[in-house]
Image (cartoon, rainbow, N blue to C red):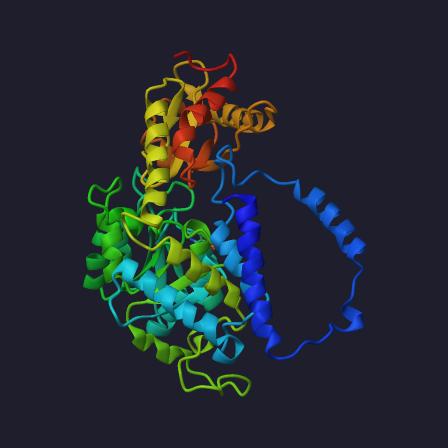
Length: 465
Ligand SMILES: *Cc1c(COP(=O)(O)O)cnc(C)c1O
């Protein structure tokens, strides 16, 4: 969006709020709140300089972690809502933004195929959303534990501790997906109340076979929670006519008991905006509580009644609502095509890497996350030598002032890689590899340049093509 357009839209949005405020009569802010304009200007200059100590998350050169700025629509809506600063804890705190939250959560439920009856709300993060799902898991099965794959987000092990449940890590297969035989062994013990399946692991971007996990878990009376904090919006790609991903796990989310998706990851939102949805609204009974402070203006549902968090940014709901109006949750328009481009970028780069003997893929990418490593010279190579070359490339691509490229790193264990690459000599238990999250649609056109930038930093001590 052009800067002038952005500023014009912001000005007219703010003017609209000013006009509404004027109805209540003009008043002067108290003198204790006054700051001279020059003072603010000076602070903003310093602030701007401080902010330069950052990575250029919005630029296609940045292909490292799961980071990117929000869409300008979300920023505008958020900034306009900040003139009121609604709090979606209770309807009293923000009637309009609470209504918008219900609408965007219904959009998310529709995307996952949860039908008309469900319970859900936004959260301040995926961590809190998962915590809430695990808290319900414990409420449903107080005497049982949870199981998640050894590639699941570390939050699950930690949050199981917070809610006082046992946690079992299920081994993964050579693709980094939950191993079904190992899961069945765990289920057979009778100790698992809820299985956490991940739709897009944070490290590898691997997708657990949700469509197989659900019937298996059900056979043993276990529930299934899907952690789709990162990958949830790929459900739109799965619903495309010719999906560039395996659609089965994503379409099966419709049958899961609960799901978490982060609008602040692939939903174009600023932090913090996560969400949790439960397929059966009857879990609402676990939230029953009695608050003397809130919930008095209306008999309608207050979002705070179905959430473990109290105060939450109403602006987050407003920003998500405005964004989904412009980018609806549809396979072929709005958000779907944006995610499909990142996916195609991962496929395109994977092809370049596969054709280049100086590199190996850790796993074939399932979404838009790519893990690969450069090969040092020689037939059999030490794990430590791969890690050293990875770290060299990681640092040098970032430090190259003429053509900087920003990647991330991932620690691939021997269990994962030894099955895939028999040439590695395991002088260390794991290998550090390069990791790239291609979550911006601009990455697709950028792939040849990203690859060239990595190749340029390999140096002489590399396998020859
Ligand atoms: C990012 C992520 C989380 C944690 O979510 P936050 O919003 O960072 O708190 C949990 N699970 C998965 C799979 C993730 O990718």
